[in-house]
Image (cartoon, rainbow, N blue to C red; front, side, top):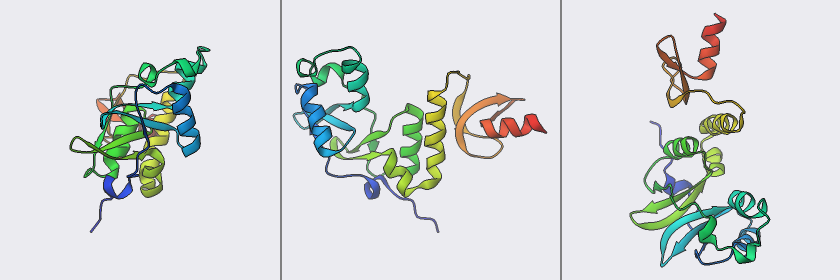
Length: 180
């Protein structure tokens, strides 16, 4: 009998957070001191968003803004994508791949219970690593394929699908069929 690893088993329970009125300089220092790439933004114990190294680079550094004068609230991602504490690791991988994110706040009802990262998923569920790696490759490519995510009708893998001869296939199966 296969036992699924739950988010509760894999998450980091002690989440480092920052207030939305903190400066980006303060957030950067907390990340550097803690050796992490992102912070959950909380006000009055309620998660309001997330700020990552990427946000700081794209929204502050690249625009030559003074990080000490920019508040976290100005650059954070406020539409927080979360996962429930009782979900399994496969669901975390699907959410991360679908939304091109590497960190998921873990919620126990309305309470922030932890955070799970793509590294956690890969470490505990190597079979999901291909899903995350393939999604990263697709996101970084210079071309856009009209595709949809789901289960390949030929091999059953979860991937970006491309309609081919009336079936939704992953890239590998599509290439295999074209080579036959």
